[in-house]
Length: 171
Image (cartoon, rainbow, N blue to C red; front, top):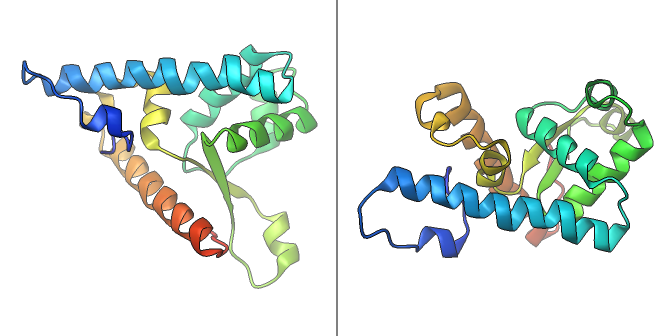
């Protein structure tokens, strides 16, 4: 589930050869084509008028490399070279509206502190992150990456429950 994701068409796909690794790699390719590339190059540009979908794709890859980490928009804009802070905020909101990523604010007792402190970035489904980065089977051998995927899974599930219940969620 951490590697294939919660997409029913991929979870129920039968593989007559019994090759689970092949099934995993195939599911990542399907996710990359259907979820990532369609959202970046078709859905978001059509809906929001994005002129530079390649920069949006680069942003998604950089965010995928930092999943479950605290966002630093200034550092990300420098890393992407030529992306302004307002454009970063706009592109991040597009990725959130496309249900690829979401952010959680840091908890504090005061609203001013919540707004000032960093947000953490998560993917709605960790498998999309793996597909975007074309991680293949690497998460199976890396305990740090497995932990990150597990944290993402817990955050995504909690986020879905909080959204459904009308609660506010923090990290």
